[in-house]
Image 1 (cartoon, rainbow over the protein chains, first blue to last red):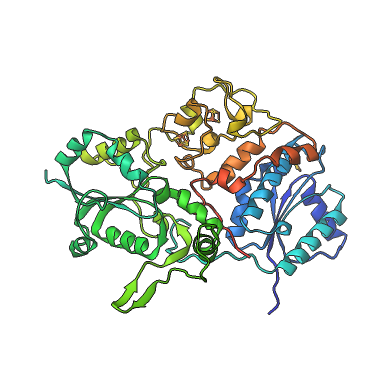
Image 2: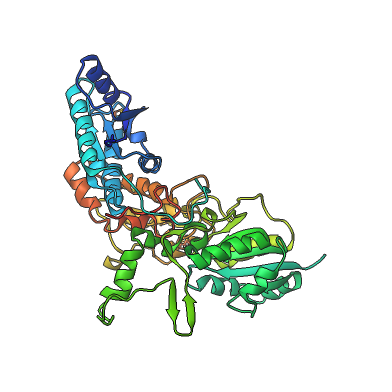
Length: 144
Length: 319
Ligand code: SF4
Ligand code: SF4
Ligand code: FES
């Protein structure tokens, strides 16, 4: 069976979610591999959410916020930018290849940007294959 | 009251935890009044087979330090668990993986290649790696199997209490031992320490704006003595680390490296610290943000110095 990437997308309520919605209403062709989670603001995205997504089986994570300067809460997405910049360094060091984590600004009317971001991460991750961790010898199911 | 039976063991660790246990000084006499030590490889001559011969649950408390990196350590963790009523993870390695846990950035083959083949001082006479079993003329020899992944103690067996620190401070050790001697142990699962809040709560340095333009390393300058180190651009993990040590490191101008583990309620210490660092950067320019953060040279080693096996992704994936 061919590999279908599982992508988790975190979308802020005010721009990105609206942009994603518009992509649907406008019938853009968008890869069906994305499970979206709505946040009030991308600045509310704890880096641990991204790591948790990988832990729970995601092959890629897309984070979307308003364009810089347009965050509904003024500068939440600057926080996102700083966290994601550092987080990407960390995930790469953990062997999670760069294209698996993507930050994309999507404004409320940017249906096309959203579609492109989804299609791009899906294809990038498809080419990389599933995200898999190394063997863990002692598995007790604890501490999960 | 009958004397308690106490066992102490070391797994993947450095030996510092034993030193830390001895730091309680002459209070060890108080301990000896209340407890008999039935197993302690560093100090008394009891063998594995003696432990094997004990009844299940016949040891009252086991203080286990070190992470689980090979099959012998796993075996001993399981055996001591079965023999002990209460299992205590002692020190950062048992609690969170500790320094040996950084081995989870690599796998067995990579570590073996470095240690037994690539180091400059290794003789280049072929690829000779340790084998778990070997047929010598005198008979079959067995050594423990080295694992790809380092685990924390509670990823292997149930653990009742945690004593944090690398190694635990003497007062932290005594807090636990005193509770033990008096039979007043806290609820199961407690991390025993004097503070559940962050190291910053114990730290006398003044925090104020936390806006930095440059991340520094410790050797680059002598920090100002009264201002928070993070605000001076040093990556002090105190904001994301459980207090109780008394903020020892920042007191002497060294950034906290996080040895007491995450603060209460936080699952992933590294991700928590990463957020904290991101929030002190003073810039709204994408390029500048990248430049400032490029000075975080070793994000995993900084954020997860003692807790990689305990983190959400637990280990690196290797291509
Ligand atoms: S970040 Fe470090 S120096 Fe600053 S208050 Fe916290 S423990 Fe002290
Ligand atoms: S300041 Fe941090 S690194 Fe130093 S002893 Fe305390 S918890 Fe450990
Ligand atoms: S509301 Fe969209 S990024 Fe803050």
